Figure (cartoon, rainbow, N blue to C red):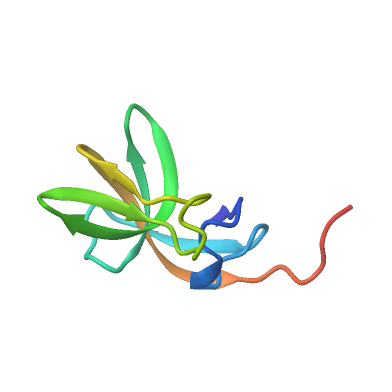
Length: 92
């Protein structure tokens, strides 16, 4: 399980502070929400796609200027999101 940070996945109904349940696995299909390592250790929760032979980690936020998709040459899938628990009360 991980705690979501940022607003790049709000259109997939994943909001900052939500708990994301992740099934550990090394493979995923296009359209899956994945936790992936890329570019020397950076990690993200994004929607997986492939374009022109490259993996693309897509944000799920209509503001693509602020939350652009990430095209990577090497990708290490750590798991696939299988559920989200929304946080109703913000901690102070």
